[in-house]
Length: 120
Length: 110
Image (cartoon, rainbow over the protein chains, first blue to last red):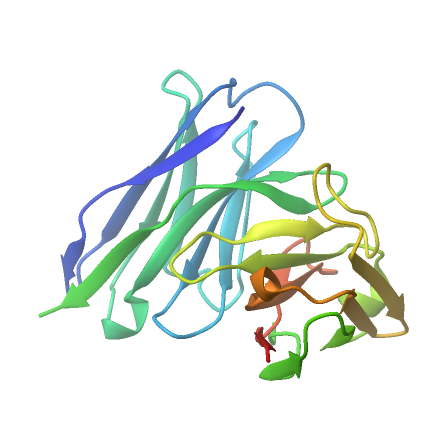
């Protein structure tokens, strides 16, 4: 059974960089055809897809966040990471990591989510 | 990319059937048979309940069914149960090789 767990600071100062890591257990992150994804959800609002990374390191991002976001993968640690630059209060949200199958393109395993608050 | 459009809420009584719509464009919902649906209980992570428009992952009740016509998709819950009360989100693959979620629908079981 694949499990994903987000980790990182719960509080980030305005204009700084938000950094989160997702640790995958129960299977190798480098085996199979999967995209490793980040999704966020502000309190009381809907889901927003942030982006994904493939095992090869290739990435795809939400156009609205593309200039501030970076996702990377570390197969040796079975982890993938998210960085969001120049954060504002609008980046305050629960951040989820998830595994997405390539075909079909659906997110079948999710982490429990971690709340990140941006404040000055 | 703009979020797919869903009704804010849908209500039904136990045993009834309800349908949640998900409106997109030819660049997402209409362009691919890659619509998925997620159920989210309060304070929990979303759970995949439908993929590829109408397929259910293992363990998902047959009371959940999906369909698509043109640029819109739908999720139907039949034989509504109290435990179906949750938020539901559609999602689609897009022509930009990205994903887009719907605005979300709260299902109320009266």
